[in-house]
Image 1 (cartoon, rainbow, N blue to C red):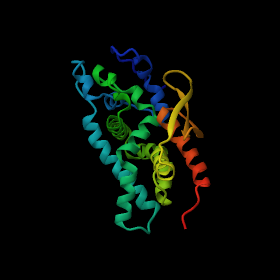
Image 2: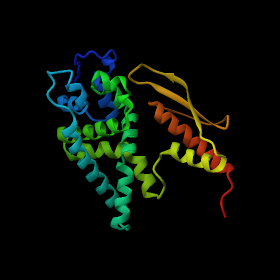
Image 3: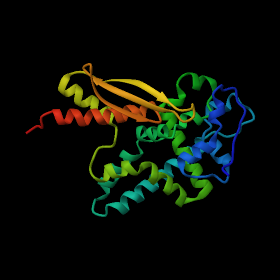
Image 4: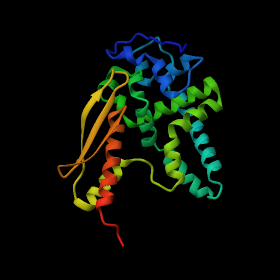
Length: 250
């Protein structure tokens, strides 16, 4: 059985955040030492309000950055033996950039599990890109310390698999929202508009549906376990439509 964790806090949403079994299920990894997982999810702002808590996730973040970089570098090195160091370095930087790691965190709904101080939580810390990226790296470090190199490799390859393939095939990383904005600005001089049109499921496992409009016309819809992921998928569908409609440059 996966260990349960039920820390007591003043956070009104803590009951589902304490369900670390659900996070482990999303990771596909079960911790022997759940304290490592708890530490990975503890932001420094939480310590200032909880004297009984001794450690935040900053040291784990440092280790996780190194572990992720090594695993990504090795994976790229093994999968494409023809490219030189400069190409490998560029590909690695695409895969470990902060926005990509924050997206991975959102896919896991990691923000919902974080232990934050009240001020940090009230000012949007659970969806702050830098905070999510740091927590994601700390999470990988906790897997590494708990299980070793092979389990953390499995977690990284499972979560980053589509991005690995994009980069290896020379496609841009899957920041579809940025690509859609670039296209609509260039072709029409306007920005896309996003709206969450549906959500379902319990608080700890929500599914969202987003739509995107360009100039008042709906161009795509997408679903995901976070609002950001749903918007990314809606943008991906809109890109396919617009790229079919936009004449290729000669």
